[in-house]
Amino acid sequence: MPTVQRERLTVVHGDGAWLTTSTGDRLLDGTAGLWHANIGHGRQRLADAARAQMTSLETYHVFGRSANEPALRLADRLAEMVPVAGSKIFLTSGGSDSIEAACKLARLHWQLEGRPQKRIVVSRERAYHGLHAFGTSIGGLTYNRTGYGTSSLVPECARIPTHGLDGAIEVMEQIGCENIAAIITEPVLGTGGVHGPEQGYLEGLEEFARANDILLIIDEVITGFGRTGRMFASERWQLSPDIMTMAKGITSGYAPLGGIAVAPRVADRFFTGKDAPIFRHGLTYSGHATACAVAEANIDVIVDEALVTRAAKLEEVLVSEVGSLRTHPLVREVRAGCGLLAGVELNADADAAAVADLCSESGLMTRVIHGNTLQISPPFVVTEPEIELLAATMRSALDHYS
Ligand code: PLP
Image (tube, rainbow, N blue to C red):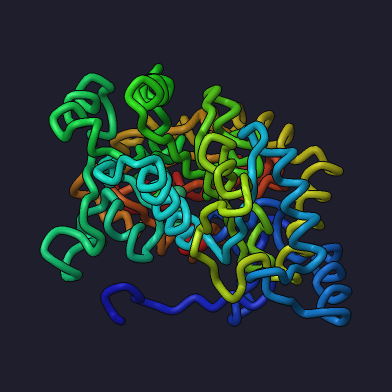
């Protein structure tokens, strides 16, 4: 579609933080693709894991009494890793699938609790939770909802302000907590423009949720597996989600996979007694064996190479290098300081797409996200000189248009 694709850029090869295009150009991957290539491109170890699994058993579904070994091993490992004590893991095939599972489960939870009126899922303005039916409906980027129904695909979704805890609480009190199933939030709004949380906002949401019998869903699809300098952002902001969603960094994009971690408060009833209820939800590729084997190898790489510590250390470099663009006449705001994540928001009249195009012509892959903002989220293997190069390339592209 010409409106979204001015000129095609086909990527044919990747190694570390670098990409090669079909025309032979080399680009620094300033965004790790769609925030997914956390361990960098071209890892033999993940290819070996995929090959070994696929030549033994490509996959076997996890419906009913069936299972496959990589899915079982990965679920056990995730249960140990996630900041959700005693959790059960439900594997999916990506981020939007994880959102779908989390929201359905939240509604089912209150149905089974005998409080079926608690159905509303509350999300934040400017939030992005993928584009399946629930994700489209709870998303806070209005243009993603347009044309698919009068207000949203899935009824009973509501939004609270992105910033300002008092305003958020006011909206929820107007809705009535007796009608709210869950609050869902990204720890750092990603596609909405890279907005870190205001001091006390996330903690305040959690406190409000606890006090009012509302489930807290933390969407760690972008932040999970190290992006904010902790294995999970919930650890950075000391959150205890009832349900946590994951995808992207779970395999660093080497295979499509996602999952949710579910706290005992929600999960236990499905495992208790011979008449325990069933969570009637699942996908052919939930717990896909090859994808799970790849996820295991990916987590091994993250741990063995201490990539989360590396991301935490590089935060400072990113803050100082990208932060130096703050004074540029075309720049309205630079948001950094949440690990290897930053957003450079340009003035409303600046053409961010043109700046991004010029960056890619000059060897830096970036992209425009909500609010005339350029996304910066390099793979964790990026080096300090590469971050300096990233900022310098962006600066010359901005200079060109100022
Ligand atoms: N949640 C968040 C926070 C995301 O950023 C995304 C994708 O960018 C999703 C969910 C949806 O993930 P997927 O595109 O894998 O379906």
